Amino acid sequence: MILGIRFKFHYIAGFFFIALVTTALYLTGDNGRIIKQQNIQKEHKKEQTLEERTAQNGPIQGCDLFSGRWVFDNITYPLYEEGQCSFMLRDYACEKYGRKDFKYQNWRWQPHGCELPRFNATALLEKIRGKKLVFVGDSLNKNQWTSMLCLIESSISPYTSKSVTQNGNLFTFQATEYNATIGFYWSPLLVESNCDDPETHRVRDRIFSVTSIEKHAIHWNDADILVFDSFMWWLEPTMRILWGSIGSPDGIYKRVEMRLRRFEMALNTWSNWLEININRTKTKLFFMSLSPYHFYAESWDEKKNCYNETEPVFKEDYWGISTERDMMHVAESALEKLETRGIKFQYLNITHLSDYRKDAHPSIYRRFQEPPSEVQLKDPTSYSDCVHWCLPGVPDIWNQILYSYVMNS
Image (cartoon, rainbow, N blue to C red; front, side, top):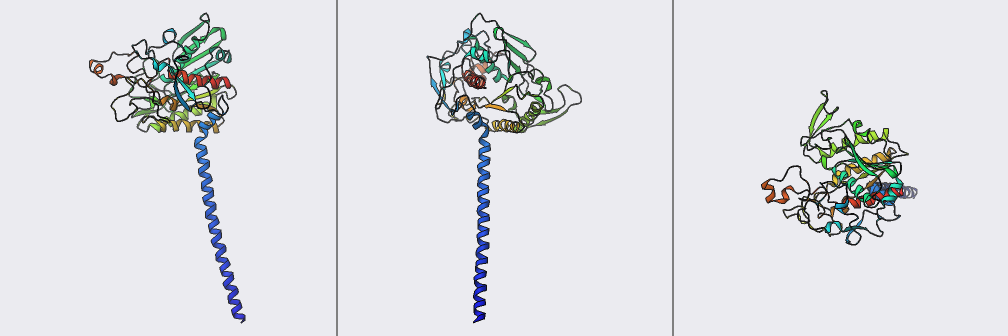
């Protein structure tokens, strides 16, 4: 009898022990799943942080200025006339160089749920009175800088003293009455390179110094507002990395194909310089996301590009097949890392809204340094510029968005 009771007791104890172990293992596994799920959610949140932060901290509470649609508006657009802008450059003067359809000038960006603040030149000049705003980057940033000057000139008194001067890579617009300066600094790779000549820079065998930026940075270190961009010049299949200064006999060179890694290395050098040298309490920092090119039309099986395109893409949430989103991620990652080091940026993600505008490039309607050959003339798509933008046009919208952030800062 006693033996039977002992057996039953051990049996029950053993049963509870097995149940306890099984439950513990289950809960451990479940906790593991919960922790994994939480980590995934954190990672997802981290991936969205840069764009979400820019939208949430935007000039209009609760409105993402980068999400919307293009609306035809021939009443209030264009914001200025091409022929009346004395600062217009021949690279963007499509009407002057023969473009006959002008609808590209009449499209207004309409964010979902709010209105994009209209550009007010006098308000901007008052905001930057006694200050310096500098665009730093490549010809797309120059495109935007030119747009900014045209927007300002069209809105202020014709008697206001204004001028543009050039000193090496730095082009400077000054509005004397406001003691305001708006500059553009040519530095297509941000770091030192063999493409740094502001006039003669069509170099196929591109070299960039992975360690040198000071030569450029000393020219915009004192700016109150900096607007950076860098993208198109990194798309060459191969480039040479230089450890040392351009022209130095002691430099070490290495040819590489990895464009994402090249871009990342240059942004690291740029980031390190900013962390050490930038005035964190004075200088407002902006980074423009990549400007999309349109070497193909909306239907990707057609052999054509932006030439003869007269309408935007109307497909909702459209992304072009050639939009380099992997390059965007490299830039976004660099900005995220800078934020952890105490350097705050506003990331103006104009890529998606610009991607719809396959109609707004100069194509053949611009100045060409060398006249097209007879062979090219037979096929206009072969020499169309599907990278830059006609003015008035898409960069005006970029500047309206930039204006909104500057005025809200």
